Length: 229
Length: 188
Image (cartoon, rainbow over all chains, first blue to last red; front, side, top):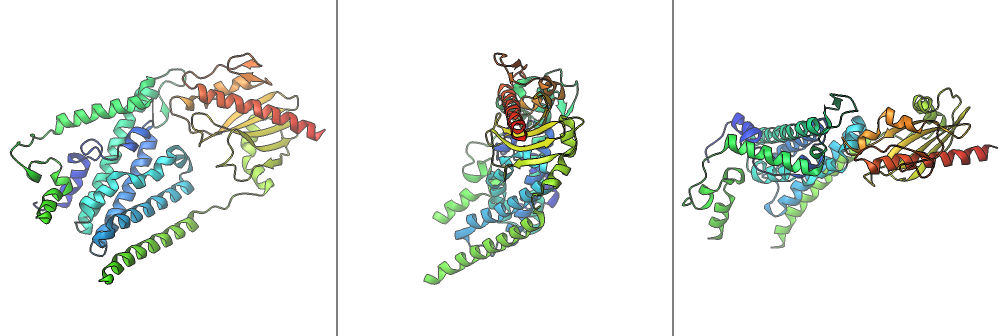
């Protein structure tokens, strides 16, 4: 794999491998908390903070953590940062904490974070890992903001809690309901696929060369096959 | 060969200890001791009290459930008496059992509701959240018993597509009126 610049790594998370629209990772938050744009921003920034911090720490410790206990070590570090975020948010942003509810603590099991720790931070230096965490986190935030903007404007006729027509006019309730979340997410994913579609891999490209996810996982299948031989 | 188990165990242990220390420090820094002094509670809430029971003074905290923020649902959590009536706080579950709506109800000396305010509500935006509308809550003023279907007491127009949240608020106000009647009995 050729070496990527910091900017490329950052852009990669933001657009090319956007965790929500391209990798389809961590689908819980984009469906559950995108009923209002302010929730989406809060959730996105909390996730970004955890992602950047855990990527940096895991990358710094990548030679210290033995292979046998790497997943327990990663999840302990991630859970630590998530708890710190939720304690701070409870103290200083109580209303946001209340409206995010259980989904804030659920950042621990957001597979974007463990995914980036395993795929990227544990194999790269600190600075690229920081860029990757920031890019992925902001990509996630942007995705949440786009979904919630569509849902809040169409479903509640408001944006960031500011109502357009007062309380007497109702929006299309469908977009506030869970079905609306799936609909908006599906449409946006399709749109992203149309805009950024790459040529499909040729069938005779066996192994990681023909796999669209190879750049994300760093060719782990080929490596495992080589190890097995 | 037993030696190979030592390093992973030790590394994981150290990581856990460091993270725990960081968490303990953060908890210390963000911890706010709960207000327990009745006079202080009443002073903090005075603006809200005045909103639901206009023209009242000298609030006295009669009772407050310990740790009510997380625990009580479907229950009266705080009772306050004032010069011209009393103010009752009720937790009532709407759409989410774990997140009850906190309803502040002012009841005048004659037993009629003088005002309703939702202190904390995290229902679904665009649906249950619409119960937190001053014009909807004004329906309760002047009545003593309420229901959504109008069979018992005054009929309340529920918020469309938010039946559970509407019902939660109606139940809360009914409970508050009953609690207020008990408070008046105790006072006499």
